Amino acid sequence: MSLRGATVVVALAAALPRLGVVLHEREAILSGLTEKSDRFAVTLVESGTLGFLPGRPSAYTQPLYAWFLSALYWALERHWLVVGGAQILVAVATALIVHRIGLLIGTPRTALAAAVIATLEPFHLWHDVHTNREVLDGLLAAAIAYAVLWTLRRRSLAGALATGLLAGVAILGNARLTVLPILLAVVVAWGLPWRRALAHGAVLVVAAAVAVTPWVVRNAVVVGCATITTDARALWKANNENTYGILARGLWIDNVPEPPNGPPWPELAADRTLAGTPTEVDECAQARYYRGLVTDFWRDHPGEKAKLAAQAMGMLWSPQFTTEVQDPDMGSAARFARSVVQPAWVIAIYVLALMGAFRARRQFLVLAVSLLAYQTAAAAIFAGTVRYRAPWDFLLVLLAAPVIVAVLDRIRRRSRREPGMA
Image 1 (cartoon, rainbow, N blue to C red):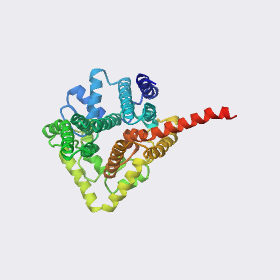
Image 2 (image 1 turned 180 degrees about the vertical axis):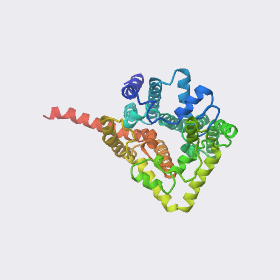
Image 3 (image 1 turned 90 degrees about the horizontal axis):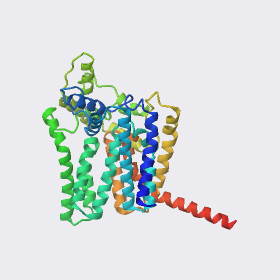
Image 4 (image 1 turned 60 degrees about the vertical axis):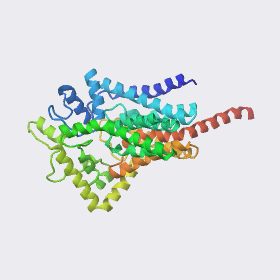
């Protein structure tokens, strides 16, 4: 198959199933459990303020997905077809990048198999078209992996620069990636003479800082603290005495009870204000408060934190969803896909990826293991769940694809021999 033909196949494999999900889920895309970035985007378009309320700037989320949504709402409108259609295009772009990665590290057939299988992961088919930031996480994860491999092949400072900029943008979408540029700097410097290694690593880290700095400066000026996000409460929800039991019961960290006499957080203050009870909040002070609770918990309960870390890593890599369904409108087909199809897909990919690791190119294997190890460490610090791992599942599929193609070839050869033997 030609490159053009393969590109068309990958694009259609990504777009058509998601279009069906968009049409089926059209009433829920903007009315279900939407990301708070949606509120930021609406406020930005209506008032010019990035926050929950007009005239009250906030840093209570990572901004990238809010910017993405606000661009759609400003240029078109806030409509299920606009959001669903745009996120289908993002998924198509992600699949095409995965295909390009496959061409860098394997054959056209394994590249095509990897791109199609990765984009058809059941979780992605459902999750990618709803209002969730992970669709951008997946795009940037694939772009970063491609940039690193291109840089390793060309030994180019321009590649290190591009990788750093992509990593910086990814941090603006997911603060869990804050120290990822350091890991990437080590990977791109691997095997170079020490002066060139230092130059490549430094360029990458500086480029990431350049991408992030305007947002941090904005927060220092208009919010009051130089930070990527003031949502330290999310970190606290994943790190307190109640978290382990909540997660063990199949609930999520949002169900953790609030600390007694804790300050209002920005979203709660906005809700109270809109309900007629004006509520002021010092975002930076409440962020410091929740960070203090986290560090106190780590210091005073190291054993409990170790249990949480082990639990989080298990939840990250579990083939099954470890939290109960929170959507009462989810149909039987979706529940079957969630409880049976997705776990079966993940288990198969795990086994095949492990087999494929023994035949993978060393550069890609090092990159894949490094990125997946980083996500595991991030889960140990924060929390683990399928949606945090899924944007990086394409790495496992790329490892598995040569094994899948080899098995299919063996089946095809055997089927051709059997009629002759008869």
